[in-house]
Image 1 (tube, rainbow, N blue to C red):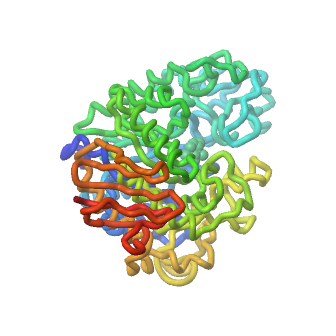
Image 2 (spheres, rainbow, N blue to C red):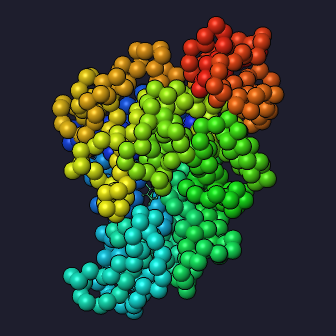
Image 3 (cartoon, rainbow, N blue to C red):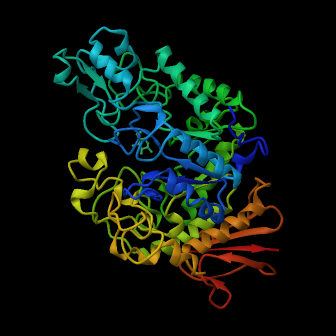
Length: 536
Ligand code: NOJ
């Protein structure tokens, strides 16, 4: 196959890469139907190049009923028709690579869509059939596991398939039946899917819900007192065999095809077990994102992550937000910015000016740390969470499964504003309404406006990512003496980061040149909630 080979030039590219998370439905709409698509991305590659990113991570772009935003895949070898087709995906991978930008895709191994041919065949074939063995079908729910989206994890086979009385397991929605990873078909199929996409030039995969795949075959209840590796549906020791096989598949290809895990794991040792040299290359570090905006907390998070990663030789990652959590400027404007994922609720007061100052400071701080950096689309524009979406417009099953108590994740998935002063702000050609409505106030966040404003979030990100390139070769970090509310460290011999979380302006180290700051200095001093980058 004549696919471009993304990793030959620099096998270590992933260790310090800036990876832009592209939520395809909401990035840019090329064909004017109100939903983002591959054509939209192809038309905006120059924007991504100018931003200074090394890779794009696409959330699932496959055929899917979109019951969970595409994390319900009905065919891993097809692109969702609303997004484009395989040829277009290949063209996009190639065009991005020509600009030096690699492509990472999402794989979703824990579950498939209930429309996937395997699940349909299992329903048709009935109890006791080999088709059912690829899933978890039982005669009676054997436990009371709680879904990650609240509510039940067992659903009875729908009546239209005959009253066979069986139930099936889904750790997320009923439209996402869990696969049985003890079944050889399941293992073989996923390895084939990896090869299918590596053959088409993708440079890596982001692995969804990576710690959940293996279940205790006895399906016991969760007691809360499980020993490490003994939880019935999370982080079981056997899951590591799967990633060892996947690493062998990735290593069949020239250069480096990276495995990036979505591993929510508070224990740093259990977390970095996924990063052993024959498993994944990196995994998302969610610890930093869920810490309150306090110097000692952030420093402790940084140190513990660097310490945890050192023995396995993997670099840490830095993540300020993603498509599952409250947007950074909204989170950091709250008294308790540690509310990220599970504790979403309506009506938490936020101060967006404060949140924006802190998000700017956090953007520079995380960009200065050693390891790879994830930027969720729209964070480079400083978009706030849209908390007042009209009720009928919400789509996220998390919202519905909480009976409307949890706002869900739609508020961080609203289509990007590109230009102009009213909806759709250049997201679609013409004036088609986007799949989720954009706020009237977003004219000030458009790429067009921000690109022309040297004080904008976009200008800050562009400058930061340019300077960050000069730090890439050196993975060391050394703290300098400072007040506990000031995060002051060097990278290499010439670069210093100073983040001021104290309640007063501070003097900057002397005899240094100011490279960039997240807020203007006042009388040469760095204000509260700001980061400065300096060079000797
Ligand atoms: C994690 C993904 O990031 C989230 O969006 C999705 O709903 C769940 N996994 C289930 O696939």
